[in-house]
Length: 584
Image (cartoon, rainbow, N blue to C red; front, side, top):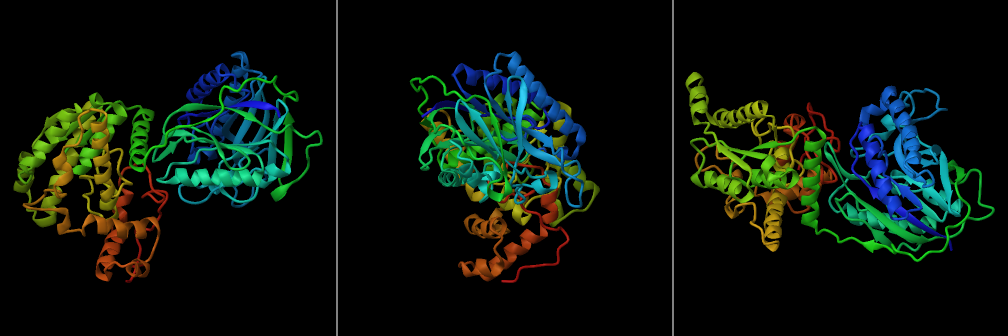
């Protein structure tokens, strides 16, 4: 059987940075060539970054992407890699689509190309277009209608893009019909908790359906609220894992494969789902037999808490760096949320670039002040204390506020102070709100919701505690100082806006609250279904009412890393003005 050394490069692209992404692709192609690769691949839309959203509708950006692809092909040849086929994702447009109602203007395509000898020798567009969750690809793209096959050293390699594997039909059975020896799918599939297990089973299933070795190349990095975890996979035709790349790391997964030789009378014409085989022959002769050096490998898997924590770090780091910032600012209350956000920030951008401010009021406990200072000592972040009592007294002298208005004034003073420091010193403010609080509206607009990014926006409160405990445990295992004070984890959560206040004055215990929220928010279950699962009807009705009436607050909250199947943002789109209420 012919041999083929495949290099899968799971890289981090920046949306819109065509020049920077080109340099990244050139650099990783060089690494692949140095390891003797015969075929090199990069993720979905690696040249443009993903997702490009409405940039796809700008003809100027589409033209720039196409031009950048041709430039990349030429530079690969100039760099001595002309004989090495490179598969790369980019933004294209259909040359044949006719304008019609409901079709994106300009007929953009989520496309990939094969570059060889300084030329673009084959292009194809994603066939299945996802239109669920964070995906709006029917809004942006027209589908591809070919079954692309490239012959490399006597092996027919079928090509696909992301959703082409996630949906039944299309290019997977078409790869079998085309008698491909390898199915290569390039992807930019966002991370979700537990998705790695789903992804592995999917690739195994599709390999068996395609009847050939299947390589699933994934993107790594972060883009706004999305984070990409890498975890590229190669399985054989029986669905057995051949190789698996690391999670949350840029890497080049190189694997030597023994693959079936291309048939002399390989099929042509139209196959499954009306796809037309588009075959390009680059090299007929197999490579000289060699001793495999890259038989595969299985990168260590992260446990569930480490996986989620890593996703939050990668998402925060990408947002800060890709938007040109160097430092972040956090209001440190001594509580668990701001403590976890501070630990994430130190891991993401370095403690020297993290600035914490304690802003005690007359209701702030001594232990909370001490816990904030202790967190700073443990992590080494920059720390200062600015009491808000004088500002609060000035406001109260000028106007009469009581109850909730008086409580929220404290939060808004802290938000104003953080933004003032941000403007003065150039840091971006991180909002510390968690998913439980955002769900039920337990936050103050223009107060604790102030910020450019919310690192734990998609993390329920019970998970906040679990992640804090994991981070401390991981530090202890490495012989390091645990970053989060034990008292921040063990004490009852409190906003400390009035004497003796604790969260359970207003909310159910978090384990119960989060269980209800997970069903209502993440799984779209109605009140009757939640009650039938054993929850108190009155508590369910109250909780769901709080969720429904807080939609206007969530719309004004900053973006934050998505780790669940349904985060607050593009995943979950409900009207603010809404007369429907669930009845238990």
